[in-house]
Amino acid sequence: MKNLRKIISAALVIVLSLSCAMLFSSCGKTSDIALITDKGNIDDKSFNQGAWEGVLEYAEKNNISHKYYKPEEGSDAGYLASIDLAVKGGAKIVVTPGFLFEVPVYEAQTKYPDVKFILLDGAPHTAWDKEGNATFNTEANVASVMYQEEQSGYLAGYAAVIDGYTKLGFMGGMAVPAVQAFGYGYLQGAEAAAQELGVEVEVQYHYTGNFDENDTNKQTAKTMYQNGAEVIFACGGSVGKSVMSAAEEAEAKVIGVDVDQRKDSETVITSATKGLGSSVVQVLEAIYADKFDDYAGNTTFFTAENDGVGLPDNFDRFSKFTTDDYKVIFDKLAKNEISLVRTFDVEDASGYATKDELTTNLSLDKVSVTTVQ
Image 1 (cartoon, rainbow, N blue to C red):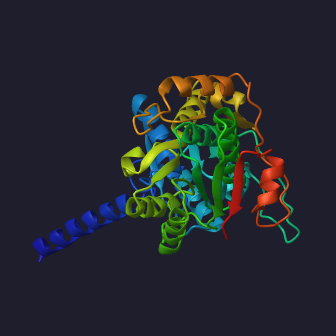
Image 2: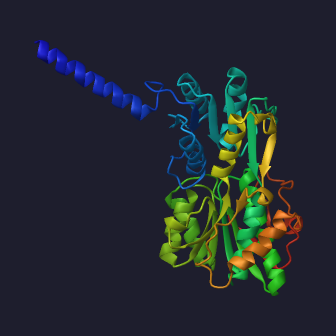
Image 3: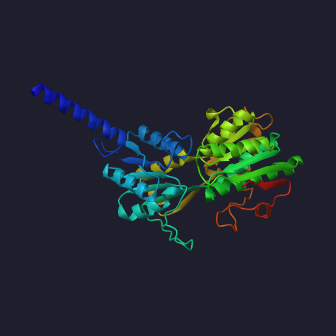
């Protein structure tokens, strides 16, 4: 009987230990740095992975405890619950990747004034009311980090046209500011290259309304390829997987987003990247060097000037666009010699700009846009 009790007790210990590991709860060892994932996974080849790689780089180099938490549900309440769990688990710094954390961090920043938050791609605010209003406030324990996606998008569009592609596609996820900026920059880069080469460029422009890998998004990409698109800028997290699948079948090309996605598919010629990992590292360095005031309570933009955006330094999948070409155009962006439109007023509440709005506000002449519904 005693042996049976020992066996049962040992089994319970194993089960409880596994439960703690699987749920990333506050069981056992505490962590100083925590990252909360959004709807995706830590290996999503996009925002979560890029931010987590920054945490890993800094924490492992400096022997600082760290872990990530995946919310049980993708909602404000679900994200806040994971923040609660991370703080209970000892986190003194919480990294939140993406605009979906804007409302949860707004709540958490006053709930946990002694915890420092790094909010990527967003600024804390209340939930939007029925009239479309919200209260924005970034407390002194929050670093709001954003990126000039229009510069990264510009580089992608410019490179594609210089390389000889004149029939382009854009598949954005939701029409949030970051995705809009990527798309607007993409069109402006294509326009600049078209002007330089004296060619006409056609662009099919579409928002999926989600960031998912699904059959609908694959079919949309497939249709765009059938309608002539040679390369599609897949700018919507896991939407890119759907586009890559369609590109493989169509023997066409893809431009990735956020992180270098060339390893995900032979169809990816380049990616419009953000320095997700490097920006996380820079803010963590500031925190541990008692220089958090450089970021505290403000929104800091990472740009070409501080290597916050760009294309991966590998151009072997281009036939004409070279490293030297890239350095020239990137240097102009870094020196602010190229002025870009990041945002403009869109009449439709969805944020979906019409062909005329895109053409007028982005001063398109050589680029002809067709909006795909």
